[in-house]
Length: 175
Image 1 (cartoon, rainbow, N blue to C red):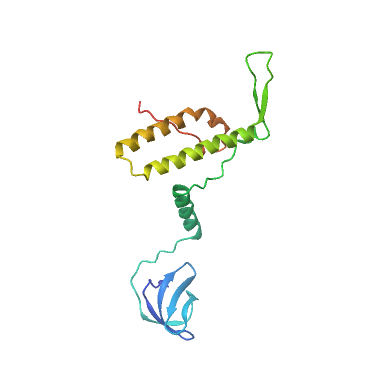
Image 2 (cartoon, rainbow, N blue to C red):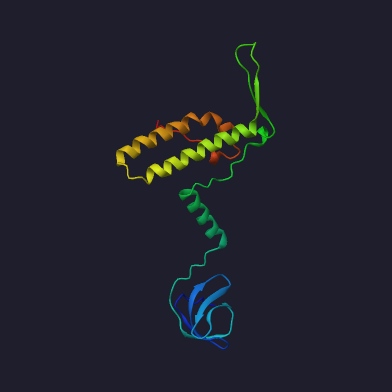
């Protein structure tokens, strides 16, 4: 069975004449003259008045969700969920002063990790705002280099990240 393309005209026994306005993996979305928008199964009983030779692009929900996440990540202040490496969960950061007369300080490593990821998120937002600003191109490049160097300074904390793809990346050198 060949799928009808968008724009195909059909005559359905129950709904009458209509035009295919969308195609999914299981349904045609058809706008009928008398009953408006209806979804009918691909195997439904209908007469084809005129078949459009459109390529049918059935996009999966996964692909739509992936695209939406990418767009939101790029254009919003919303941050992704960043997970600490399993070996650090429940751990603590102990800061021991060089002077033995002073007391050390302990901090749950999860809290410290959260602060690090907040810095990263804010740098990303700043980067987006710079790129969309009305600054001259050279000014944008100069500010972008500061951000890249800041990422580079934070690479020491990459050991805390569970996923390598979420780690800090500084300036790369071509050697």
